Image 1 (cartoon, rainbow, N blue to C red):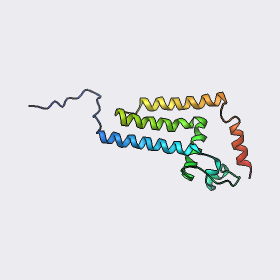
Image 2: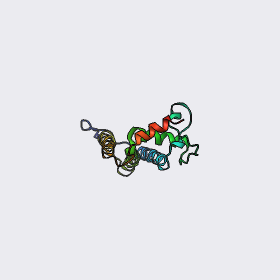
Image 3: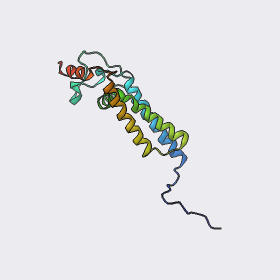
Length: 147
């Protein structure tokens, strides 16, 4: 008997189950890392060297980030790039991991594009609504100028 190896045009081979589990676990771990970096973020968590010195806390308070200086840098980058909507990044990473683990689904391209649009729309809405960080950009600039 012959084996039927015909494939439909554009059909991708099915990935192995163990690879989906590893990739899903990596997505969830990265999401938890990003979430923990935001939980207790403060400017005191930033290292006082290089470009980050201008944004580091000047009060001398000890950083309390759950991940340490790496968490301070990750939290700072999330807030710097997306503001209060930066919390959506960790939620999206955890959700992508759950999708990979539970449903063996492909994440690229539709889900990622939808997530990016949601993230940018959330950042724009929070900036326009002015609920969080009212005059936050002024506080960040004035804190950087205080020596």
